[in-house]
Length: 276
Image (tube, rainbow, N blue to C red; front, top):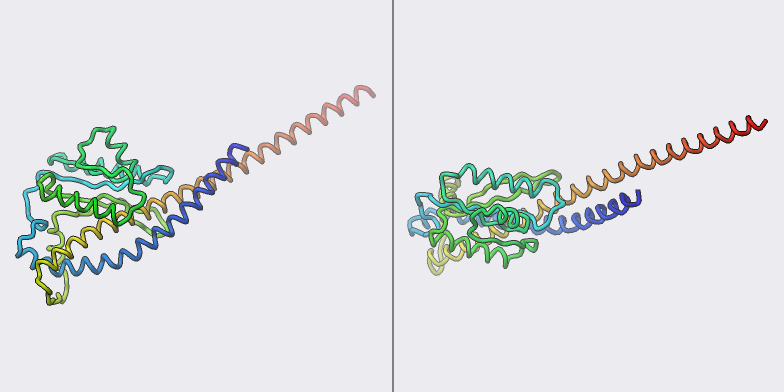
């Protein structure tokens, strides 16, 4: 019972820490989500003109090499969060056996798992807990370089979508090439006409870079928010389970003590009756 009480205190403390970090991460994610949503609409509006400029990031290729960025956690004790991501990554590898595939793990758990399995990697980011803009810029620059150099013809991102009050679900989202933006342009109603200063090419090039960095930053934040949410729920469940075990052991202890007292009283009464 003493050991369980100690573990109960640890899980309760971890739940409180995860709740604090979750609230902070959720605030960052919510603010960034609205910003990127508007930027994505803007980039989609401009993507038709970009296609006419033959922007290399919109290049249509015969896909032979595929890469998947896998955003796992840096630590465990968060329920099935990491397990679901690893399963989804393995399923992606199975579904794309006809292509030359690579993984780019971001997060210590995924990095260690796929390194031991000797899965081909284009890069890795073992520590992603900070999920700051500097890391997003670094990942974005390297992914763009992989695409432009021909190391990958298609790059996607696997992460856990955040769901308020529940377990998030894994999702594979396209990143490069940007043909999906050109396709989404056709769905935009009442497209806006813009005036460009100094010119379209320089404006769009700068905007596109910010959009890609923002997209990586957003999925890092969403992944981190989902991880803290999963850890908070897992530690809460562990704490509640610990309380149930303690209650059961207390009941067992009381029953055993009562049985011992009853037996001793019976022995005393029996001995007294013999003496009489």
